[in-house]
Length: 218
Image 1 (cartoon, rainbow, N blue to C red):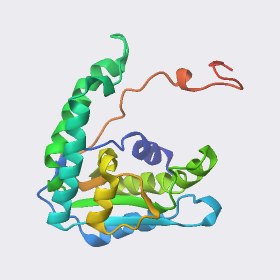
Image 2 (spheres, rainbow, N blue to C red; image 1 turned 90 degrees about the vertical axis):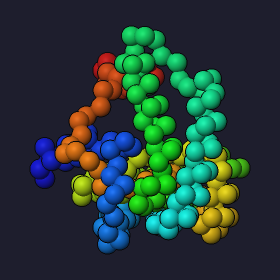
Image 3 (cartoon, rainbow, N blue to C red; image 1 turned 45 degrees about the vertical axis):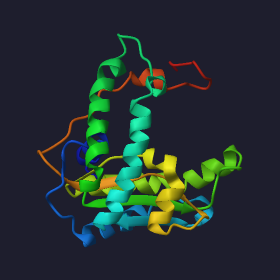
């Protein structure tokens, strides 16, 4: 296995918003191949309860985008919902750029030629942690595999969840049954430019706990 290529894919698959190319159509067979790859992801109890709703209809994309924009405006107009970081934290300098990028997507989401909504059989509203982890653990890996497969084929995407504030409305637009849970909305398009770089992240040592929480060094 060519580790350099694999590592490059894993470290440069970004949430693409401003660089989505809305002018180029995305072939149906390309989306299908990415989903075919995604269905090799783990699935709890081998249930294989995945569903990918692929939305290309312009009217439905606009209806979903309207829901998304309404949710975005509620978030953008409520500073209390935004994380607060110390000035020395790299996330503090990144946040304004991310918000600007997210605002752009909120106003242009309907222009993305394809919306992909990963869903899974089952609901988690009244479930315990174990059941929730099992349900989401059976769709989120597949959705991320879809994004990786798309990236490898020159397609950009962005992990978004704001439309879930109006999940029932989105389900009505798309005919999604009550027993299915939507996990995300992924706008998909070719991207402009040539490549992406690894993002600035916090020190790995901070995220690793050896044998006990807070034991950052083995």
